[in-house]
Length: 269
Length: 248
Image 1 (cartoon, rainbow over the protein chains, first blue to last red):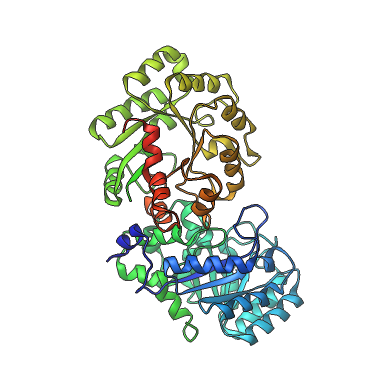
Image 2: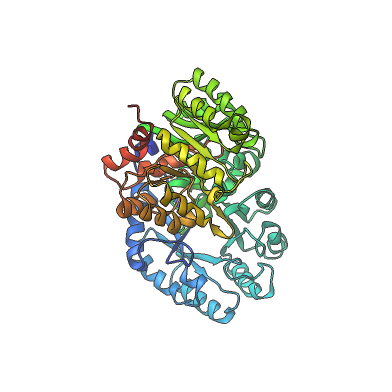
């Protein structure tokens, strides 16, 4: 059965390795998200993963970005212990440098299933190249961690990552939402094509730019394209539809859905 | 899953580059993903002139029986041929859906023009469509939309391409007005179908593609994997729209 047939029937991807690189747990101020308790959300999200056949989801805590509760990262560790399909991003808040790095140290010591940092320069209203992010870049560079950075907006547009990519070459950078819209999408693709350690996170790029996956596949090094959903904001099924129905070779679909992530996360998944 | 598309635009859009270039490509894709019927308006009725575009739509409908025509109405009609002749055209062409683009067609939702067109919809038992950006700007939702829904409570008003970041507002419209329907093509909230059906039932939710702007695949996938009963899925995928078309 091919991918389109599977999704038209709503069947799980049983024989396809599927990694969702960009998920969240928690509440948000301007949007209704079901289940106020994170533990209940985690449980329900596990059902969503099961329906789709997601092998791994990499999650960050909204409390650890939109509030000062960095201990949420340790709560995430609890959820990761209950569900082996969950991997973690440690949140870093530029106005809380010491606290963020302390929590990061604890999380990365606990398990290698925390794969890196999640930063959101728009939520925290601080430019990605600003001095308060430098300790995080240095930390990631020293340890070869991945940084999933929201890359869309006045504080985080993709061209701002150029110097960072050149300077912290041992840190892997996943450009969130691939820039979101044109011309930022092209800037993100150009960075990923130029720098070996820069990757492209696809969620959100389709809905706002109204571009289809074919556009990205034609322009980007396809080994850099990573599947993601932005759950709890968005829905994994929506993003899957973009890949399943795309007019691209099946092998590229499989790379995007999970095999590229598997290579990036070698030794962890 | 039987698919009736509540939200599509036919023709060549030139205000931005869209992935579906024109009519032929549109129908090829619709056929490939299994869309059996589509409520469509013509791009030129939105971007050029409603009278011109609607005429083109009727020609397209003659070539393709799977289309249910949706006329774009605007005050252009009033001043060109008058509302009476406009009504005749709607009746002659068996039109069941009209769509308003207040911002793009040069009037406001709160204007007398809108009231007159909704009165026409009430007289002729038509369904009225508005895309979400017609009622939403950086200042929030236009409060007059609420007034219209209340005043024309017997006219089905379909909000198309409802936005995921505004889910609490379109929830409110469903809650407050039994004549409001929402079309779900670009609504990609987590558990959106499950939550909306739990809160308001499935009878006023419509599946749509938003072609040519969006690929229909993601909205097919959203509904296919939603944890709903077969009955609710059938309501959303085609039955509700079938009821509004009112011919089957």
